[in-house]
Amino acid sequence: MKTVVSIPDDVFAGTERLAWRTNRSRSRLLSDALKEYLARHTPDKVTEAMNTAGVLVLTGSGGLKAFPTVPTTLISLGGFCVGLGEWINHPLQTSLLPPSAYHAGGVLTGHPRRASLTGSAFLILGLILIGWGVLKLFRA
Image 1 (cartoon, helix red, strand yellow):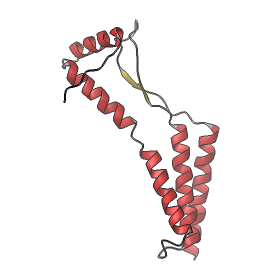
Image 2 (image 1 turned 120 degrees about the horizontal axis):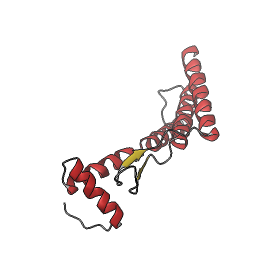
Image 3 (image 1 turned 120 degrees about the vertical axis):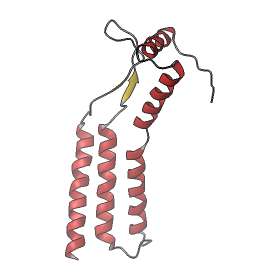
Image 4 (image 1 turned 60 degrees about the vertical axis):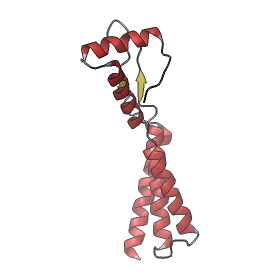
């Protein structure tokens, strides 16, 4: 598919230099960069948390009668908290860098995990709830 986009001159120049240096076409370079960017921003953690919340609602309402309600609810709530904690601890992972004296620019880069107090608290709470739910499941 062909499309027209507007990008700043410095980003375009960096893209040209990187394409030439890596022996790829500009289209191929931009396509690869967008694929990587999209792969890093897929809402896997959010989707997982939402799915867990759905199971939580179904078990709490009795919609999943084949499962013991209390352990399944604890495990589901724990999974939701773990997913939410990881989502909080992993903010925006990539950015498009402007050119500088050290690099050509237009390079996608990742940011390290940023453990926040809130995200870590949700993570620990989730692990405790999962453990408690598994314990109740096997003791039932």
